[in-house]
Length: 251
Image 1 (cartoon, rainbow, N blue to C red):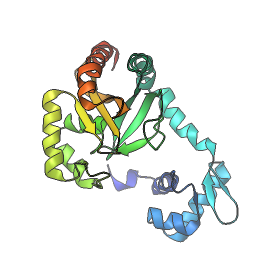
Image 2 (image 1 turned 90 degrees about the vertical axis):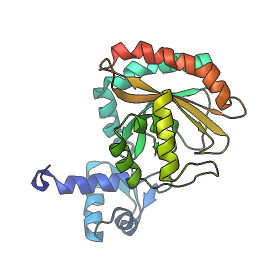
Image 3 (image 1 turned 120 degrees about the horizontal axis):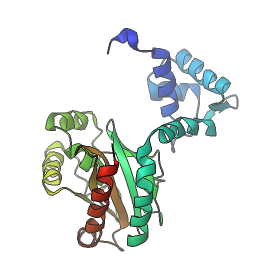
Image 4 (image 1 turned 30 degrees about the vertical axis):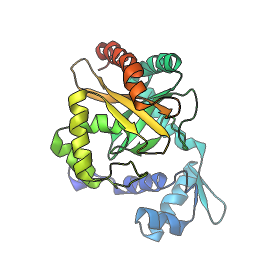
């Protein structure tokens, strides 16, 4: 893509929106400039434009996003049939296991949640559609990375901020690369307290009719309720059935 084809003002505006998160809900101009790498004057113009368009509010010192920003995600969900296709299957899986199920796609170095059926909160953060987690240390992320050509997966890992969230996290390239090979060979991924202590999860790929991996499906649970061995023995067969049922339906 040529640089002349890029609308840099739009790119800067989106960067400003994306710098707000759960830990940075209210930001000053200086804070936005620091978090985005933009000049302070540029950050100010972007923020005031968002206020003018109704995507943010300003109290004279701090800016905060408004619910209108949710429209951007809604448009994606409305135009993409994947979440609607998956949701009924997720609901059935969650009811059958008594645990929360999710589906996600790969977006840069993260996984992006596109559907969820939650029976109870298993993590300290909200994992509804639109939530993001790092791909390298999540079960769905490893499924999606393992489906890529090795050089593409390595490029994503090179751009990732490999943090050890717990003492169990595989956060170095050799360990992750070895794990991706295991995931590719066995067709499922298991995470045992790598992202958060007390949490484990299992994931499988979701294929389209052509056999391409287009998303991942997982179940997450507290280890006190469902160990990884129980997940493999009891949950994996149910997930395999959904994988098979969805394949002819997905494009």
